[in-house]
Length: 375
Ligand SMILES: Nc1ncnc2c1ncn2[C@@H]1O[C@H](COP(=O)(O)OP(=O)(O)OP(=O)(O)O)[C@@H](O)[C@H]1O
Ligand SMILES: [Mg+2]
Image 1 (cartoon, rainbow, N blue to C red):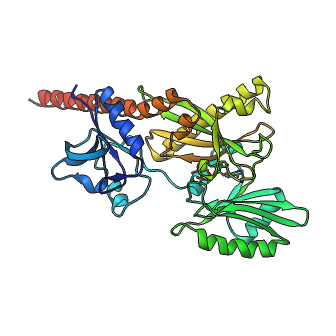
Image 2: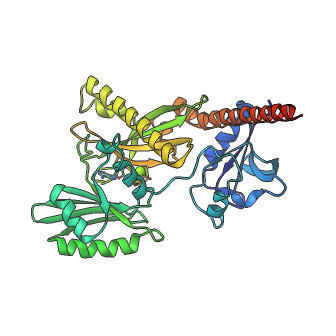
Image 3: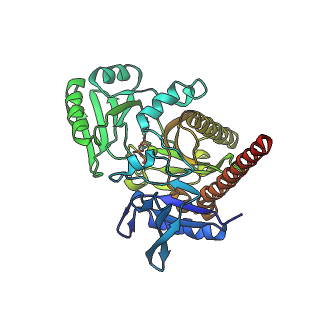
């Protein structure tokens, strides 16, 4: 079989890419697996000529040249550039991963799935009435952009003795720490906040607050990576914990968080047996989630799941990321998992190409047989 050609679709400005380190590793691993891998943006594709201007590392910089039309494309575009969405809709390539949706729609979808419901925290759109309703059932709520990432613009609000306490971070990661005497002043502040912090035309969501303080003074949550393997089957590559900074409402690594193995954190609070049960439940959750996603959106490649484990040991799905990072594995000192997390999407792309070719051959054979019969 000819050497498979794999294109990585991303954002590009000149020779600058959003994730240069990761892309270098992808190209290098691709070579080891006997594939040609290059990076490109939608502006580099020339469908009429069936050619792509692809970028590959060249020492410390990048060099570009013309490549044949890729057999499989992995969409890793995390920042939409002008023209990307239209290009993506045109189905120019065999994509390893279909497009997904935002956090709020995904949460709504999962809440309506019988098999997933139990893992989804109560979530509603942000508005004043919903805030009152949520505080009737929950002492803590989180408010976050329905289309956000990076832990930005998230606030945690706790009902306290004489009012409400709000902790949060702005888009620019500036801290907010405010006390409100009543719901009216809190709502006024929040209405202003959602106007200031909103991303494009996005709305905000209110979510039941989970008590993730497994270690005193620190919230932590699990980040699990599930990927398709070289046989096209979903497999959990690994998982680890993100531990937030002191008095931080989120565990985000950019917010001063650090990484640890799952066992190291869970053993501080649960027995080894309970720890095993929790991890197994997280794996079940991950398999359930990707099955539902593929049912609704079509073929996918990998997902990073943010999973909350509360102090009682209950498991909750916080978020699913269709273009997940892998830094956590490196920060945990698990280079093996990091390496595997890079290899797997390429192995899956190679597998997918083989399947596509077999399919094509079958169709050609059928066509030939039909022509024979018609003679
Ligand atoms: N309902 C909740 N209860 C408790 N903690 C929460 C809740 N929602 C979010 N958090 C905390 O905030 C973090 C970020 O939330 P979320 O993943 O929804 O936002 P994000 O902007 O996508 O962040 P990231 O890009 O790091 O995934 C979570 O990992 C968790 O620590
Ligand atoms: Mg998240």
